[in-house]
Length: 457
Image (cartoon, rainbow, N blue to C red; front, side, top):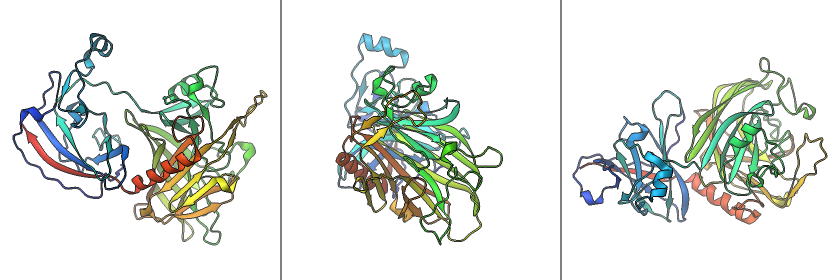
């Protein structure tokens, strides 16, 4: 089960009080009589847009919930007016009617461990510097509210190969290689992974005969960590050597075999699940099993999450089997480095790769030319709490990596981000660096959540 802390502190005060009816949210004939006050606190001196808020079931005062018995309302947002006849006809009986005293925002009540009981309440909000924002969570059945998705996750048979995809409208990621991430840039904000999987379109050059806005695969992974990957630093005598699941003593880095493992019985094997699919976040799970490095035996799970209106994905790693045969083993994660040193940027807990790229299908035999992109950026951020140490790993195609001491829970978290010059956001090296630095600051300083009154009319 995943447990992601939503705040540095929680203050819970529960009481039943009577409140002025005029201050309560309504939507059509939905007039709830019970609500919980939640204060979301920005602890930073900067504006946070589309900021994730995660509240676990253990933290939440109300345990018995169904997703259609929860309405999350921001009272500072303008209420939706009465829909027109055309809008009502389009939305049907589940369309939102006229609101008063705020506006409902998209949320998810996610069951992450698939036991039929919700584990996390998730939503996003905008926060001014040092702002403490009041959010109301109303309780009572409501059958209205179409949720437009800003993220998508899917698993598809893509060129006869089972792979997971997860994306926001800005950027997408997929695992052609099971633990090294491919990155996909869009020319306009949209979701397209389902179309790519259903139709099995070639991911390079932007499939111009289909929809040029879909963009292009912009990450040549090969033997590298690509736009994000994991490994283990096992040999203290070789501090820049790292073990990778798809390169084992059975296979090794054989480029001619496209960097896949030997087989599913004797070598490392993988399994994928879609855990959550929108509207505001989408999550896939990667299980890596039967990984024998020659210096130990390991199994792990990774949870990659995409967020609406963001150009990053977070990843939580949990080792379910950790049996090293040597001492001093440490966790590792990384991204592919750029061949030009001026286009690499490293500081505490952050590694960024920028520069021009020649996007080309490595398997193409039709004579198509590569597509030169002025700027492709990828980044890796590891939280300060994990005490990451930067290591440049020249093997496997040259990578920026971080070495992380093994934690008591045998887990850690990191963040990957991406952008390119043909997209509409962060499409220059400087704007991408600024975005990554700001995101890293937010990632290391999660919003604080305070529970207030449980009110009853």
